Amino acid sequence: MTTKDFQTIIQKEASKTDYERYLKQLVYKKISSDEKIAIFEVNNKYIASWIKSKFTNLIQHCFEIFDGSKPSIEIKLAGEKKSKKEILKEQVQNETAESTILNPSYTFDSFVVGPSNQMAYNASLAVSNKPGTQYNPLFIYGGTGLGKTHLLQAVGNHAIEKGNTVIYVTIEQFMNDFTFSLKNKSMEHFRNKYRKCDVLLIDDIQFLSGKEQTQEEFFHTFNELHNAKKQIVMTSDRLPSQIAGLVDRLKSRFEWGLTADVQIPGLETKIAIIEKKSDLNGISLSREIINFIATTLDNSIREIEGVLIRINASASLLNQEITLPMVQNLLKDQIKETKENIKLPDVINIVANQLNIKPSDIKSKKRTATVANARRIVIYLTRELTHNSMPDIAKFLGMKDHSSISHNIKKANELIEKDENFKLIIENLKNKIINKEW
Image (cartoon, rainbow, N blue to C red):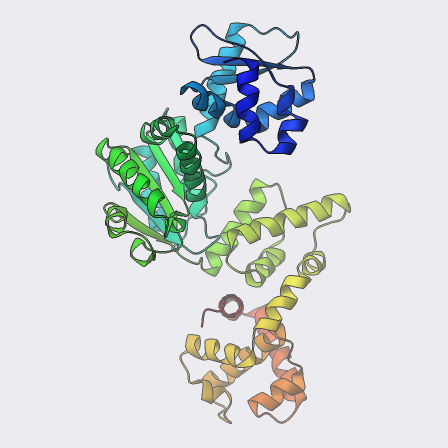
């Protein structure tokens, strides 16, 4: 290939802006004697760095289009000299990075285990210790933000430590890679990449729905890996049988091994997650603040992580201590949104369900200890979690006036201070109401 050949191809493959600003400046110098390294030069070190970080794969595909090869790409500053040893070292790093773009913080040690995710955790740990020997494939499913990707990448990080070749991609990346390879007649490289790894990790497999051509390719990739006893782990927001637009033969294969769900964490697990994430990020939070975050936010671990980052950043940038009022102020918009979505009947229904009494009893004139306690909890939680005023609550519950509401709130606060069991009941109910578990 000459520089002219290269420029002709890349001009067609790249956007006009990228070509004119950066890629036009590339001068193709040579390819190494073993045809494994293609060397380019540019006159600006910043452009060299930018091209290397953003366009390496595109440049490699230009070689695939030209003659079917896929050398590693070396971008040099014109006049700069590097030893073959340095170039080979970068080649190995590039090849490793292509298949191991994992978050190093997603490990089994940093994952908080609880009743909601115990099975998925144990299964993930088992396949990472002995890939391809049991639970193959492993199919992890559950709602958004509950830790599926963390477990998936923990498998990958553990497997890499043991010397295994790992490919981690979202199904969208797999589809884009497939489409690009199909368009550029480089399917051999695509198949070698995905079918010769030891562990294939696919995130969000549900988006394969309706993609018939990609499903066909993934079917054959799956078979090749499974027959070779290579480990496959997938995540989804639902069971294979519930993914519409997925061919039956893929649904059945996804269920060959083990399906394990990640459920909504209970309050204790949620608190443990906040504690763990705080420790990992070097954030010191009081028990009061941890409980507030746990009972205010929904169950998305991603949202919890985002809030902790905001808290830490705010404290650092404003040079202030992390206090409950400061955290409440940071979360005021989320609290406002939550309150707008919770209605008084919702509070009554969840409290009645959890305390095993009828919702109508709470609105009745009954004064038994069980009903009075449930009514007090409803009043307290309604005032905490909704925009209803005390007169509004009194009217809805058929009580005399707002003074009765005020008395019940005062009593509830006293019990929260003195009775740990009552406090736990309140926090658990608050968590369920916020997360609409009714």
